[in-house]
Length: 168
Image (cartoon, rainbow, N blue to C red; front, top):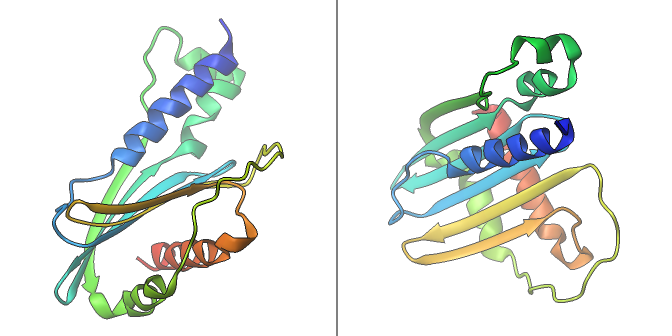
């Protein structure tokens, strides 16, 4: 059996499960970002804005726990004949909305034009990002691995959200 195909299929399942996240109220403003670093755990952070309250939800695929199940010969023996499910961790909490005030103000200043030009490089590592900002039926979504120069504000926003994620 081709273990690389099994691993890639497993990664697809783990990422799809992680990106489903947790149930949020689609009628309230939300900011969601999915961090997919090549060599670390993948995290989907969902921020829901309620008056003066920030509700946050974090769904993490613990890739560093699961990868050895496919790569380490001793670990592989433990799972022969078993269906391996992704190791997913769910967390949630609340905070004062003011902790994201600077992020909300920054979002209001972002002006990003869609990119139609193809970038010709091969990207093997780094991080893949999916950023979604929405309220009710209005949704803006950006996905990137290679960040075009004119989208640098998105990386700044991603870094701000990553910093917040580390504080929650």
